[in-house]
Image 1 (cartoon, rainbow, N blue to C red):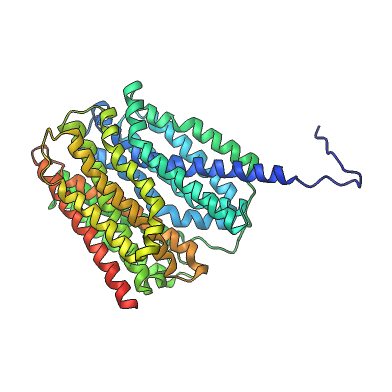
Image 2 (image 1 turned 60 degrees about the vertical axis):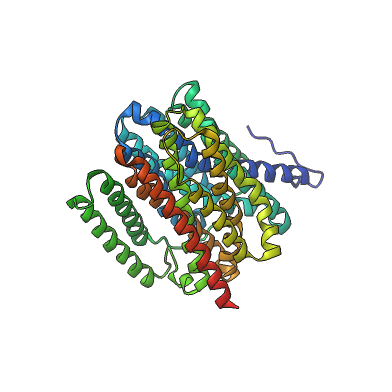
Length: 467
């Protein structure tokens, strides 16, 4: 039986300030666990690719699908997941997302073959797409004060950056300890803790039942992205003239056209195309796409280079990525000050140039290139990314009305995840043949440098035009 404690006037006492503060802090902890585990699984899998291939069989194409199934679902579903939280309540949706992610992690760890793992990774991506926007909504609800909310979001983002950085090293250590399946099992206690904290301490957000979901647009978006990624991945494996590959490109084009037509006519579109009428918004969204093509595409390539070409262990591979990923967080912290001093467009251009220089410096890479030579040159890529992403985000948000900042942030997140999908698909197709691995790696570096420089030039040019 539940006992209600009453005060002298016969009413249940108001929660104390300390209790309210504790609830906010533990809500922040739950949201950080959710976002952190999503970011952890973006990078932790890369160190396991060689082990997964040896255990379950399959070539580069299958390994591309292991990575891309997660990011395809993540990229294509994140906008609808945010709208679903607005419609039925962010707490309910967030907990469903955490449950899906945790169950899918268990399925990944138990996968008996590559196909099962790929399907389970797609389910993880669905959970990730639900977790990210709704974690931010619950965090905003827990911290109504602007300054307190700003600090909380900073902790939330820093924790995710730390998880992203730690992913390869943690993955390498777990693989060395027991095996690749442990990188998925580690999500289980995180998921259970996050679910309990959310259920116990997070407050539900206001529901907006009138907010309609754009299901036709969602179906067209995920279909177009999956067909495009699939055509690129399989093109590198079975040949670009194969009927299946050509059909994939045609299907992607048709579905993309249907998506645009749907978004133009939908009463509540998943992606308001009017945002792209703002030139700076369009340019920064495109830059976000290019940056992630380069960054995550190269992480995939170098994961296989370290293990398959140089013969390094999973743990050594994690150590090799540590300087690059370790540069992201500290540079993130100074990026805002640099932008205040020289301007956001100039900071984006500087970060892009540094990252591009790192790509060019790696062009002489060959089998057996030393650990320090490779890992230290990769620092430029991580440092450049850390410098350009914060001003890129603030520039994009500053290009739209404040009332549309939420959907604008969602579009940037979706665009960047799409870049991750395309980077792994494109660069994986370049290295798909064993005898062309090093040539494909150099091609990936050249493409990355070019995309980063194009992003820098486009944003600087747009900023000058806007003056």
